[in-house]
Image 1 (cartoon, helix red, strand yellow):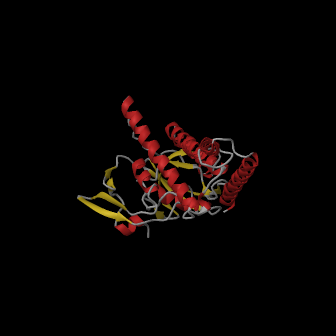
Image 2 (cartoon, one colour):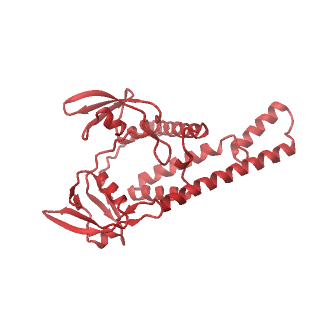
Image 3 (cartoon, helix red, strand yellow):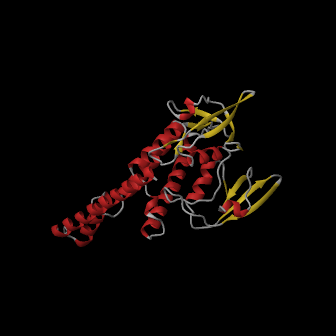
Length: 298
């Protein structure tokens, strides 16, 4: 029922182009989908020995962040890459390198089958069979609830094969500026849909969500952590420049008005504007904190 499924995209297909632009990695795919939640996306895929074009229809926004949803995920084998200490997987005797072959007797071919099944079985026993070298090992685990995310976990992280790209100085600057442009565009697009009520405020996350995402980025590696920190810094910088009293953007607006007017603004007007701006900021903090709390107990 996802846009990709409805368009005829199959497991194993390779994406070549999106909106007539070549994609070189999964980050390119995510960027295009995230910036076009309300529009159809024309993609060119390699399916077997055939090259074909399909149209991904409009999908729903993701729960957090408001980006688009197409229903496609990268190919990740169900191999355990890391086990967190003290979690159910460690206590059950699973090891790094184990390949999960079945969950409660159901065959597994993708890591997403594993993660979605575990997430939906909080405090319920799951019989997991893994292939370890030449033998199969079976054990029962009971997923514990992740208080920040609100779903079940057993403390396993998939084995990731990362392709490292090396750029020269000029290429690095060009690539960095291009990435910054795409993320800035995405941030403004989300803000636009929030203010036009096309995007639910339930998609907003607060301190708990930021902490969770930071932890996930840190577990993925130093490069992902630095990229996430850069993204958060960019978002905070953009938000700080919004024309709202108490933010730097609000002060810039005041200075522009004073320049045009030729005299300082009325003190009473400034006080009222600051009070309204502060009230809006506190309201936003309450909303995102409330969303975080709901996710914990959901």
